[in-house]
Image (cartoon, rainbow, N blue to C red; front, side, top):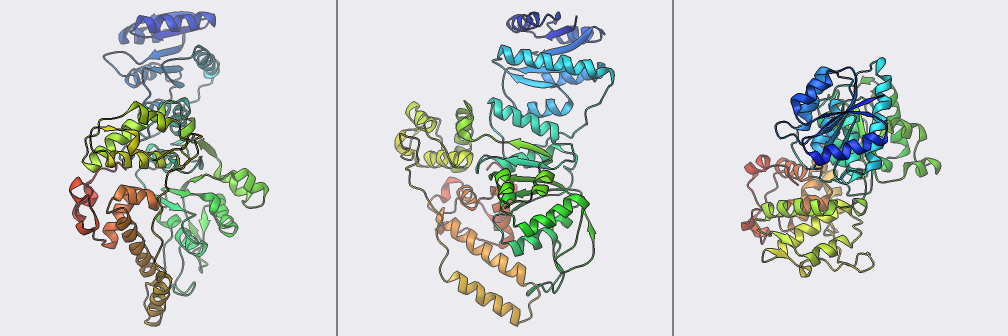
Length: 500
């Protein structure tokens, strides 16, 4: 008979686990404290540990590490009182078989135990789990306690240290870039470069140059050699967002890079070797695109070495309250407000809306509500007018249209630079357009960088970096909220927490 070692300091937990074990006809050993647990784990009769991380003296991860020192192949299922994305990822990374969150479903617990025992039976031919590196949390938070998000955390832990390509899938606004950054930060390339490109935001001709670089004279205006992202990111991680929008021509070149780890710059014939880990993301159905001849099947299989599916907000049962609290506190800090809660009526309105824009839309609505609230409580009057049939009828705020004269202005700039023999036309024009775009959106948001970043579809860290690089001055005359903490001098831009 297989022996199960149950470790829990609370009697209620012990009884629940014992009932589940008895139904599986397992022999049961019990440990109510850490030292007893470690002593019993040294017995060769123990084949599985069910670890309730409720010990007052040690965290579940600390206890797991000590168990691993005794037997690194001993299956351990960690049970936690609360969902913790960092702990779930770290537990999976270290080799814990599973990470469950209370309240437990009996069937789920039995399945976890049965799976663990099956794995233990193969332990006679030991296979060590691949080690990974710890996550350095230095940025946006991944918030969520639902089962679907727990699966996402565990998937990150499983794949982070592997060298396979990862495809992150999910609707727009679900946080695919956060997943890519977490994989990078947990992986064994975390001390190497991480770069991101949105394939839908760059025209094909420029995207090819961005990815692979170009030689001097490769095309009109190419007055100097340019190093592309695959070359800059050697030994690091490259994140290609919206990969489904890449042209078929570029797909062919990308496929060769993935197959051979070599490429040539545009207009060049020198073969360059690269060692880049690729993480891609899309909201499109690539399988349908392959069937329709719009996406290469061989590239899809290369990109799809491991898939992580992000659930839409409407399917994340219970997570909205945690997200609401997180964004409320974040908005208070950024706006200098002291809103302490949303009224029950407001929460009900938020719950009954479908959120087609997912987390990005939800954060924007919460932030606007906090901004408009004069007192301590957000009431329905400060929320958009959501439809009763879950169809959005709130006014959609669009970024301002680009001035009609901008196209002519850019054409004149290009002509002037080419005629004067400028050797930096590409960067000059791109910076000119970026400066115009970012300045105009900042004026539209009255200088609010978080809102501007949401409209631009980039992170606040990226926006700050561009503001500093382009020398954009945020004048107090632009805004009506300059005294609310939204505005910082250029020297402060790099010192803020990346909490957007």
